[in-house]
Length: 173
Image (cartoon, rainbow, N blue to C red; front, side):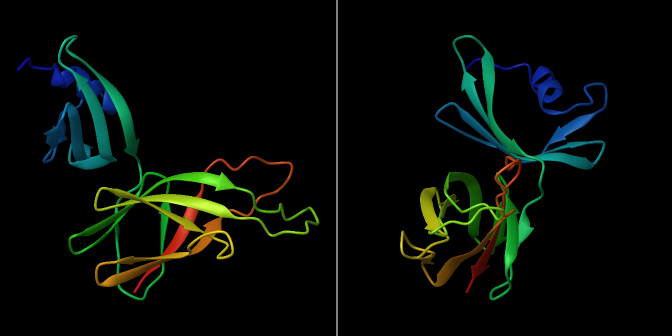
């Protein structure tokens, strides 16, 4: 197995290449390196880093990361996630991957249909789709002994503005 230049890797991941950096526990599977967090001088800067390693060229591609810290969840208490962010309850991890569709009516427009948002989550390595409109698709999914419900997607759309960062509210019961 070829070795990668991890100092170069850290310089790419972290904005401060001259400071001492540390990678906490990491795992690698099928050429994918997953790192829970990267810290510089004891301060965590990025979470849930995923790299695709190319052993032939000794290079890597940054697939995803988040600057948001994972959320510790309590049953029955709503919690918010940004894209890329994870929530953790015991051994259950829920990650907000993306918005697949947002057809909601902008707040400054009169529409005949409220629309729908399709949220893509990853739970136990499986993609889960939840909707804001129960007429279109599920707003709740059963996860072993829990129910996970999509309560809200923010911000509300405005016809003259693009949404730059989505935030969802979920409830685990």
